Length: 177
Image 1 (spheres, rainbow, N blue to C red):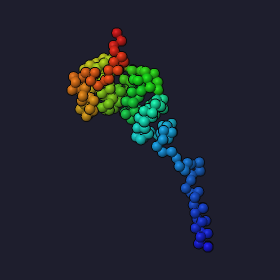
Image 2: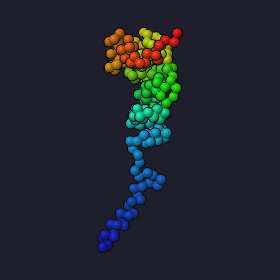
Image 3: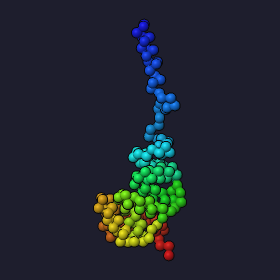
Image 4: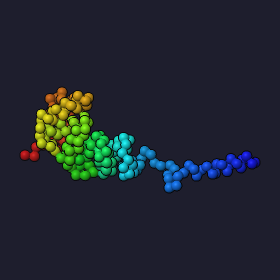
């Protein structure tokens, strides 16, 4: 009986050692709420930043924008290209081709092949940036040499934007004058 009492006493006194005052015993881990808490507390990591993809695909573009902008500020180039996608399609904010091109420029300058491809395509079209076909082709080439399949496909098609853009988007890239 004394041995049983000692075990119960040790068990009861050990429980509080597992819980820190004010702590959470079973915190959320892989939820949107947790990812947004991470961002709002300044914690950017690969898992948190990658979760923006699922957040925007669920239609929560404002949340995705908040997450991607924070991650882009921390240097995640994938977040920069997602910010470009949001700005170029008016998701969670205004349609802003200049802002989209700026995000792609930042990603391209950091060596991101998707940023290079997007900026190159924008330069070929003159969409959001001044038209510069030669520089656009150089950026497409850099992305293709990095192994980006869509860049390789566009280069093989003679840098024709129609090769990589659905015809439903033609209105967006039509010259303004």
